[in-house]
Length: 182
Length: 299
Image 1 (cartoon, each protein chain N blue to C red):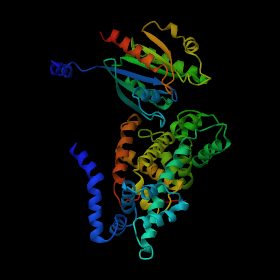
Image 2: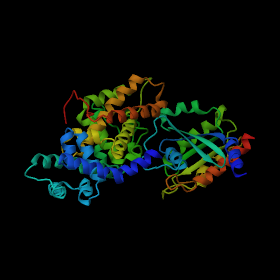
Image 3: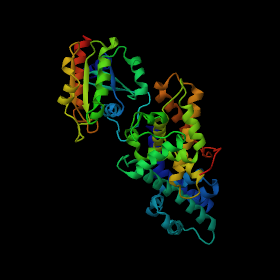
Image 4: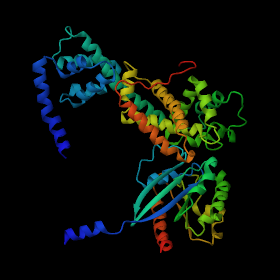
């Protein structure tokens, strides 16, 4: 019986694959977040030229996370990665108030994209470990998130550096991906 | 499993007897046999390093960490321990000294590089700011910076209007590398910068440079750079040698990138990995030294 159940487990359907797109301005903390999700060392990070991709197992899902560089010069390439996205994660540097307007604009443009219509969006108000970080509520207000009506969304404060809040955000992702995939 | 078991048995049991038998046959200890049987450079030093690290005697194991000032004393200690007559074999003493300097020097160099990497770029630090401005002036001699925070930084391949956030995990090591290349290989640096603005195959010069600092750093950390440095420096390797290896990477990566003709900058990481594997492969060659052959002034 023991052997049989092991065999059955081996044969059981593979984890459902989920495509997650990680976007945001340069220096928002996307790569640190990606490495934190994959439990990798985060002390040697360099600016992302192009993209990074990692697969992470979580709650019965295989999350394929695409981390795309945020430099203005390569933002036009973002659209090449929209197709079949299940969840969009948008990362904001909560301490970089000077660029709130720029990040808000980029997010608004993403939400207008036809290929991303209806895709659930999680906004990470990152870098909460910094004293100067704006709280998630202030960012939500500044970005007029409450006006989003065409999809489910969530804002989660976190620190990709310490890992705080990251799991809460990912729980939201896993819960809401099920709703959509059914 | 079998390989593991064999490795274990060899290290803990057979190795001792093989060495004992060879010692009786040749009348020399392992260190002497290595010295006589291999040529100067990485081939010899790597074998000596392995032999010392595996040794059961503390004097020998500690020798790989010895400081520059104690090297001679340490070598005399080893020779006493191994009953090698100093008067009879003066050249052995000399070559073992060189090996120890290389071995402990590599570890020391790694610590120095690591310390510089851990210094974050700080815009309140005058010295840091000076080096950043120097980088601009070296690369763009005919154009003045209009402000400290300006879109112009993108012209030399930083991501936004303030480079300070681009150094990240490489800290000051990234900036010092960039400045070193521009200062001592100015012609090459400007040429590569101008090539990096290619409309189709272009890349961001500065942040690719910082990515290559990471590559040089991780090769040093993993020990992969040993063969290169042991061949290059018959003594203590210096920070300068690390910078020069970085220069080699920048120069060679640029060549590699244009030869490969990637579809777009979005494929950077794939080609970076391919280049990384290529360099790692080259470093496996015991006889190789990877240096940039400069056409302009030499450091």
